[in-house]
Amino acid sequence: MAETLAQVLMRYTQSRPAVSVIRTVAGEIGILRSDHPKPPTHLFSKPSICIVAQGAKWATFGEGRLVYRAGEALVVGVATPSVGRVVEASPDSPCLVLAIELDLAIMRSLIEEMEVPPMPNDGSERSAFVVDIAGPLTDCAIRVVRLLDTPDALSILFPMLVREICYWLLAGPDGAKLVRISHAEGASQRVIAAVHHVRERFAETVRLEALAAVARMSPSVLHRRFKALTGQTPLQYQKQLRLLEARRLMIADGVSVESAAFGVGYESASQFSREYSRMFGASPKRDTRGDALSAAVRPPAGDPRSAEHGGERRAA
Image (cartoon, rainbow, N blue to C red; front, side, top):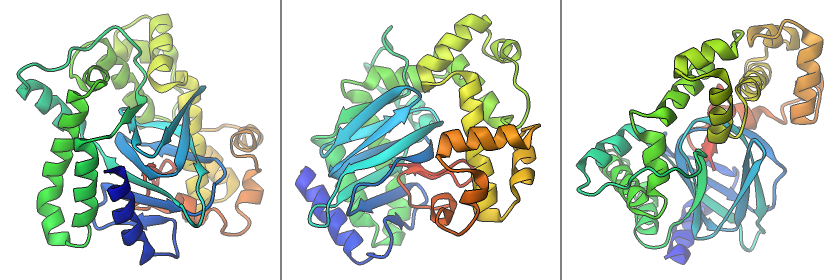
């Protein structure tokens, strides 16, 4: 079945050879085709499933690296900054990835409806993990791609396919991880509330004590569980959000380096430049000369796993 998915993705992308990220008629779907390995790209990954039909990619969330190849998918349960890279691709065998945004509300609804839902365990709380997509998940992915050429049918049937994808993820061997992430109660959900608090106020000074109050945990427990979930400490998470948004402002909106720095919460332009250079490997002034990065920060309805904060590409 993985070969069939690769074939339908190849056919779909062959008529769109000028771009590597395909914009689809549904904002929740993205297709990545890459004919060559690519350098690492900083992303803001939204909850999604990113299915590799051909080739291979890796993604890092903080210090952990996840490799996913043909027949596998990266599942992201909590919106978080990440770094992604295409590592196996060639003109004869391009890397092909289908990314579909997940709805955690659908997950919660399905958990309530399942006669025997998976039980959250005491294992890892990491919000991103790799799953095998053999069988029903691959079948769902093939049907999604085949619907892309019929927008009227896609608008009606796609929500049902997302629901089916969520069901098979929950019914699979990693269902307990998704229950832990998506469930409306419990400690994990309180940590997720803290994650959302940082996202909504990333330009403000966020104190660990105040964040711990949001999660109703001690600062030390929240710090540990926040990093376990996202791969980053609250400060690292906030810093990456700030830098991704500043990059978008400069490249996509033409905002000056100083204005972007102050706009995302930095009090010192020199500190901003140092941290920006450390993260992206180039100074903000060099990045703003020319348009080499404009495609990376343009809001792309179709990029798998994602986009940089502000343009929010999904994960691929």
